[in-house]
Length: 287
Ligand code: COA
Image (cartoon, rainbow, N blue to C red; front, side, top):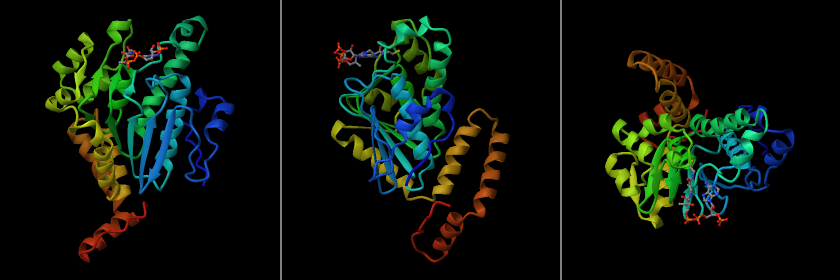
């Protein structure tokens, strides 16, 4: 099956690159990627950042990230996603070796910023919940990428750091605020200090902190737990988190009630309620 990416960042991607990114592989329907490895099994997609040596984020990386998450958002055989890094680093953030050329060409910076934003948005706006399995250093844009996920799990050797103040850059305050309390958020950003997996667990930033060996299994267990639920209800729940983030409680709950009304007529909801009455496991079809 061939899945077209959504048009979210099409303005930023040349037709040649789009064609390259959408050549489907026979076994999974996913394209071959230069910076990622993607596997789908039992309704769970595992996306591995695979741009050696440290998964630094350059233009190609970001364009592929957008395409992958748009495709996974649409694929009916994917209900939850795990995002992890290959090697010992999750992501060293922006590719600092690509940056010097940016300010030399007119329009290059706005275009660069647009792609950076959309690469993060692609993960946040993906219809399926994303579990970050933070395997090592997640620095700057690497830290932000992890914080775009829905649920965070870290290995004991992992750490988050926002080193922008070390390299004269800015960015990520809003993403950091989603998971850190204000004082910890400011500590992370003003000091560029490394905050380790165990420390992040104590702060309540990550849901679990496990040994490096157990990390992927832990994240995939959570993803499978989500994948067993009504796909329509999970999608509605993620939409509610995203849409109500900046709403007052009154408006937020009203939005959620409208989600419930829309869900009530779906086959998944009817099946869930039939299964409950018949004391059996529901069989969801994703509609
Ligand atoms: N962009 C481009 N290349 C990077 C990079 C980045 N953000 N971070 C590291 N690299 C490169 C290094 O230059 C080195 O390249 P080389 O082998 O050609 O010299 C290679 O990746 C390996 O880096 P190294 O520092 O030797 O590996 P390490 O395992 O000791 O440390 C990190 C890994 C990620 C902890 C460390 O490289 C680091 O702190 N990087 C900077 C992260 C950063 O400040 N990002 C910007 C945020 S705004």
